[in-house]
Structures are given as structure tokens and as C-alpha cells.
Image 1 (cartoon, rainbow, N blue to C red):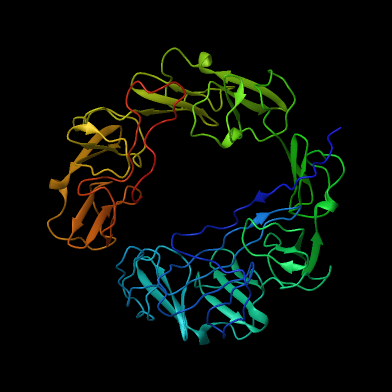
Image 2 (cartoon, rainbow, N blue to C red):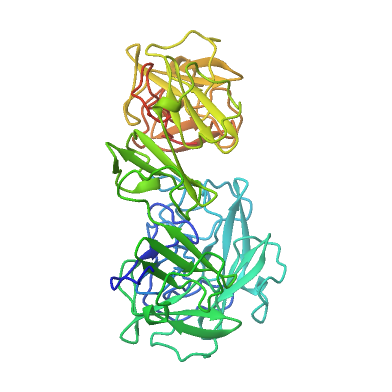
Length: 490
């Protein structure tokens, strides 16, 4: 019988994404005028115009603690440092102009939320500003999921109700968390996963702050719960539960009450290598990894360290694999590798990893720049970068040559391939991964969409230096993961 632990289990759930230079507030605040910027609160939304140098921050999930659940930060959009529609500055891809830009003016902002001002706001769409006035907001707060046509548009209403438009999901409206612990069944309007967290009856801010009570908004009413609501013994996955987002920790198990009203439980990785067919209950993707018979710190998430053995839970039983299970010769890319999921094997010139869809093999970056059209098999997004004829292993080092694998053949570029004049943003380019400096800006040829993106010069690896680097050279250590982590711009 697994007995519940006394210590608090802290669960972090990211419900959105947060961008560099952004910030969120959990301190409460009043709503703006219709079409203006929503105010901030724990789980609320905020947006302010002006000359703030911080970029807008998308919603970020909070931390579950003491039986609580996620605490969702709101959507912010602070005006940044560049005026007009152009950009400029290290945060040009994220910051808002200080003044409301002209409709249709060029923009480079990469965040799909509105930059808000006293008289409305603007969203950067396809390289041009799409603006609205506060009079364009619905006169009354829209219903959740009601259709709208300007994605990112933000409007605020009485009682600090903040509404955001999504062209895919319609309007989504949310009120801030009450500053004091609400009563059960008190009215609310916010997503069920955007919970409010309290300590001794007062709203807590900060994702790692301990909370003794968590309140979720279900069907327009608050439901509050804490560790005392955890069952005495560990439930089984699929069992019915009462408090969505409640997380409970037991000896060897962690269980979460899902939005569908059923428990999902995960068996902890054993501290020592389990025997084949030992009982388990954890996602197959979250393998347990071991060296010298001891669990590598982080279990299935400690992918930075090499492992001698990898144990995966299949059909409620552990199955362990090691380098001894690697094929003698490098397998064909995309060939079947049943029962070896998670195994990484190194060969003379490539690394192969067994995934859900079969073997995925990647050519190692050659120690010296390859000849143009030399055969290869690696993602376009993982260039090989060189200086003085040698492979660079640092993503931040300046590269003289950048080689990408296109259609299974290497294609290499250098400073000589940079255009003589600075290209316009979003124009097509034919040198994926190449960085070219022009006065105070650096232009990057994106490997993802084949267009130029120019921003004020930052530490980007220098002229000729391409996006990602750091690929393993031939003869990498056993169990090394495929080289070529992402670096630079996409």
C-alpha cells in the first residue's frame, strides 16, 4: 500500500510561452478602458503603452504546490523602445514601438500579441502592422469562443475583465484572481487551468511560492482545494477524481487530477536499474536512464548526460536496453526499431536514435569543411560551422564557413556569399544559416522559411556564421545524442 508523503509536491505546468525580456505581474490591478490594455493580477492580463524597454510576455503557467495546481500568468504587452514600425535594438523582434505605428508600416515583432496604446493597439502580422482603435472592441464583453477576426486584439471591460481574440479559438476572457481566498462556488470567469493560489488566505505571486490552497474556476464557480483533499492511498490512472489540476505525491508515485475528472499517475524512476518486467506506470517517452546501475539525476529528463542503460515502461512493465542492443552496422534511416525506443547508437560517421517512428540517423559534422555536394543526412536546421578549417563546437564562436545539409548534400557558405547591400526583411535568401553584418545590423538567412531577418547586431557568431552548431564529430562517445543543437536564429 502506497502511503501519501507529508512533504509538498511542487508541480510546474507551462500553459503558454514567455519570451525574452518580458515580465508578468501577479499583484492585481484595475482594468483599462475598452480597447485598452488589460490589467495585471495573478492569472490576469496586462498591457501598457509608453516607453518601457521590456518586450511583451505571453501567458506563463505557475507552479503547483501543496496540492495546488497551476497558476497562470496573464498576457502582457508593454511598449518597447523602438519608435514607428521599424524595430531596431536587441529586442526589436519582441519589443513594441513607443508610439502607435501607422497601419501597414513594416514590422519585425515576432510575438502574436497586441502592442496596446491609449487609443487601441497593433499586431505585427506578416511583416506589417495591423492596427485597431478601442472603438473596434465589442461594446460589451464577448462570450468565450465567440468568433473574432483580428488575432491578438486585446480589450478590457469593467471588473478588470480582459478579453483576447484568437482567430482559431475565438474570444477568451478572464478576470484576475481575487486578492483574498474566495469561497467555494463564488462566481468567476477564467480558464479552469488558470488557477489561483493562496497562502493563509492571501493570493501568492511567484511560481515557486508555497501555497496551501488552490482555487480553480469550473463552470463559472470557484472550487478550492489543498493537500488535505488528496486520497490516503495512491489511486490508479483512470480512477475518478473530484478536483481538476490537484496533484498528490505518494511513495513512488505522483498523481494529477485531470480536466477530464480522472487521475493520471506516474511511477517514479527506481533509484537502481529495474529488472525487466518490473511493474511500472509512466509515459513511454519518459524513460529512466542509468549509469553504473544508478539513476541519472532527472530520470527521463536528464538527457544531457550519457547513459549506459535506458529503461522504458511498456505495457505497465519495464524493458531495459543498453549499447549491447545497438545494431552492429548503422541502420537505415526510418527503418523499424521496435522495442528499442530511446536507444541512441554511435557509429563512425553518424548517430542513430530509435524513436516512435523508427530509426532516425544523422550524419556527424565532418572535422573539416566538407566539399560542396558531399553526401549527408542531417536536419537543415543543424548547420555545421567552421573556423580556420576546423569544426566549431561552440554555438557562440565566430564561424568563417557554414555548411547545411540540403537534399542529402552539403552546401557551404562564407562571407563571400553575403549580399553587398543589406537585404530587406522577409525577402528571399538562398544561403540558409548564413549571418551577414551590415553597419549596426546583422541579417540572418532563416533555415526554416528561406527569408532574411535583420536586427541590430548582437553576439551572433560573426559574418558567415550560421544558426546552429555544435554537432558531434566522428567517433563520438557511446550513447551520445545526435549532434547539432539549435543555435542562433531559426
